[in-house]
Image 1 (cartoon, rainbow, N blue to C red):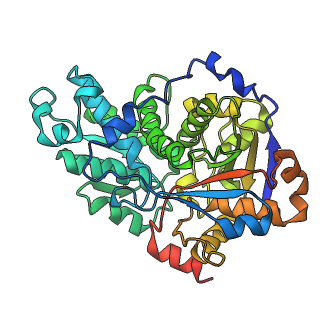
Image 2: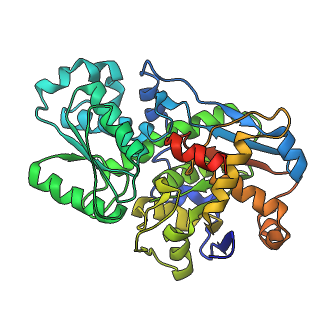
Amino acid sequence: MNKSIIWKKNDNLKDKKEIEKEKFYGLYIDDEAINYHKSFSEYSETSLHILKNYSKKVGIKNVFIKDESTRFGLNAFKVLGASFAIGKYIGKMINKDMSEITFEYLKSGEWKKELKDITLVSTTDGNHGRGVAWTAKQLEVPCRIYMPKGSTENRLKNITDLGAYGEITEYNYDETVRLVNELAEKNGWTIIQDTAWEGYEDIPKWIMKGYSTLAKEVINELKENIPTHIFLQAGVGAFAGVMASVFTEEYIKNPPKIILVEPSNAACFFESALNNKCTAVGGDLNTIMCGLACGEPNPLGYEILSRYCDVFLSVSDEMTKRGMKMLNKPLKDDPKITSGESGAVGMGVLDEIMTNPEYDKLKTYLELNEKSNVLIISTEGNTDPDVYKSIIEE
């Protein structure tokens, strides 16, 4: 792909002020997840930074960066979804409401009197599986994590260091999901997966709700600074979907524009927008943004994003490299932020739109100007230090 960015506006964009008519309205915005996460001794709000000097340079009111590199010591936000879904699953199996379940209760093992021989299993590009493995270790239950081909040994080690069984398969992400589903059915394992399929929707919904903790923190941290634009990166779209839902509902009087960003070789939402229907992309899905290398949309995320995302972007790997370098070496006294390959792409894309005249039409369409409050979520830190260093030092 020669272009840094290819964009497609959403021809099916709904009136965001009527989101209360949707069946998913209210599904993710309550405090159930954040109240649960506050019961963790490891819990604290991650930082929301302002890039004042950069904002001034490109003519934007404010650029805010939510930094997930410190989440639970795991370098990424994904543990929020995995830990909540596992807690919710256990609660459902032993007939306890989430209001009765704290993380200390789960770690006590009391629930094992009623729910025995549980083994957790998942597919991951790295961060989700690490969150599942971390939670399994806290609860002292067996865990098995399968990774697609192309996953790095460092990311595999991050998982096995937590005591889980880990394996890099010969398949791409979506094929590995199907493999894990077959293994789970054969062995009686419990799948904790962040994408949904027919007959498997509850746990993906709970994972998405777990991510809402991040959104609730941002709303608290922004205070009166209502975001006008939110750049969201997508793999299967679970994270982007719940962010779009919560922020649209929270700011329903002045809903923000949602800009979805995907790597060009795994741009299933972009292709879905072109085809006007949920569309999968195949192949090796090669990209340095390994956490976004997913070829099949999560139907739950697609339901939201197909209606409430303003623009779909298919972008080159150079965009995230630029974002990583910019956040690592910020302007003047702007804060330095360590953001990994799947975390920094929104920053690189914003800079390309604001500084390259080739994208003036996109900038105008999005109304990115001196009145804009832009939110970017850096979803991970340097989850693979070797890869991070090689990019920063290019």
